[in-house]
Each structure stands twice: as C-alpha cells, then as structure tokens.
Image (cartoon, rainbow, N blue to C red; front, side):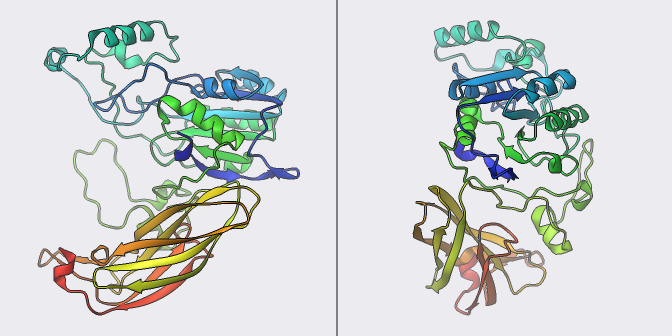
Length: 397
C-alpha cells in the first residue's frame, strides 16, 4: 500500500519540508473518510478482507499521540487541528461516486451468483460487517439486494465544496496541514493547493491503506510511486465530457497528449511523483539491435536518504501527427549519496504507427527523438536522437 502512494507536494514550513514526520508529537486526523474503510469499487471487483485498516487506524498504530474528528463541523475540526503539531485531512471519493456502473438490478439475479466455497468464512465476514459502525460498514451491502454499488463516472474532477471548506478551515488553523486524497483517478487541486504544504494521492489503498499511509508519513517507506496520468489545472484543458452520454467519440488527443499538443502545463504531469530525497539521471546512451533499443543511464541519489526513482523514456516519432509516447521505464533503488546504473529495453515494435487508411501498422523508420527523464516534460531530461533504418512493417506485427 505504501509503495503505491504518490507524493504530489511537500513544501517547507520553517527549516524543513513537512514530510516525513516524527512519531512523537500530536497529530490530528480529520475528515469524513479518515475512519472509513474505503476500498473503492462496489461492483464485480468488490473484495473485502477480514482485517481492513482505516487511515485513522493505521496512523493510531504508528504515532504516539493522535486526535481525530470526522470533519462534519469545520469549526470544530479546526479547533482539533489547532492543538496538534500536524494535521492530516482525509478527503476524496467512495464507490458511491465512481467505479463500475451497475444501475437498477433485478434482485432475482442474486440467485444466479455461484455458491460460496466456505460458508463459515462468509458467516464470519457477515458477523464482522454487522458489528461495524456506519462509517465503516459498506452501505451497498444493506441498501442493494445484489450487494453492488451504483458507481459510474464521477460528475466532477474536483473535490466537493464540503471537502474544500474543510481543507481551508484546517489549513487556516494549522500551517502544517497534509491533505490525503482517496480517489481512483485525477483530482483537480488548483483552487486550494496553495493553502497547504503537503498533498498525498493515496488512491484506494486496500486492506492495508492505513498502515501504508502511516509508513509514508513516517518515512518508513520513501514514496516512489508515479502518476499514471496528468492532472490538469482546469477541466477546460481536457476534452468535453458528458456524464449522461450514451455514446461519445474521442480522438487521440486526450490526457497528457492533448496538454502537450496545446502547450498547456498540467498541475502535475504524467509520471510525476516526489520523494524525500533527490535524484539525477546522468549520462544516458542508446544502443540498438534488430529488435530492441537499450537505454542505459546512471541514477544518482543526491540526497541524504535512501530511496527509489523511476527513470522514464519517451519517444517522439518522425510522423508529425503521432503524439509522443511513453515507451519504457524502470524503478531503481539507490542508497543515499550513491548511484546505480539502469538499463531499459524498448522493443522497436513500440515505435510502430497505425495507418487507418490501410488498417495496418508500419514499422519505425527515420529519425526518432528519445527523452530520458523522470516524468513527461521534465526540464532536466536528456534528449537523444536515433536514426532507425532497419525496421520493416513486419516488425510492427
């Protein structure tokens, strides 16, 4: 769970960045999701463990002095936060807001579900669920005859006004406020992010979500996860969206491809993620055989803590209509003040382009640019050119 968490922001307050924290000192944990088991989708992928840990539960197990508030009253939450050294605000979404769309379901379909393999395990789980408070117990188990949540597409990429109001109230009361976002995809933060020094994208962390986040907050796990998408500054930077549409046609220009084409800077680019240490990608080179390119570079840890970095390779094709594409990456663990060599294999077939007219793929040919860095648009990335002349259309199959 800890390795999946993306650190988006970690500004200095006083002499040092807010994160990582010390286990001593009072920490306030506030928000409607803080003490809720939040596993995400309530559809066919809904799987529960008998020992799930909430964010609050994980933090209480790891820190010496923890106070909590559910955030229903921002004034009260701010008072709780003001008496702590650090405040953690847990906000975001649940299976009721996003996920697999189920819609109206015939209760009789429940009889078609396969029989359980171990009735005793099911009975234990049902007894455990029944004993949980409303904030933990998954609502769809009681409210829907099939046990599925409605789900569907999110109506907005932003947090609710209630969540934003809670963040602002707590941040005004405690300058060392950390926002933890639980969500399955991008959340636009532009209207409130400058009011807090630290932001963590925690996703739906599974049964160990609480322990995983606590490990990251303490620095037991040095964050190394990266965003699998870009987070824009504004929804207007993305293609139009209709939540109720029954059909819609998108071209290739969406996500970070669209932002790059339009020259629009994202709030957080594709592949972005911070660490508690610092890295440099040095001396990249590319070798090539008939089937593969091999990108070799050195990753130097220029900070004081051990950590892991993700080297990413992007390709710009000779075809002006082809967007840049991510073609390879590698995660590498580097001790503090040390460096490690990393090699990334890029199959030539990943550079193929599709001809919609002939409905065929064409192998890579011509001068290709390869950008080796730590995220899309990395200003410190290295640019190398390779003239590919030996590929054939057969290579694209």
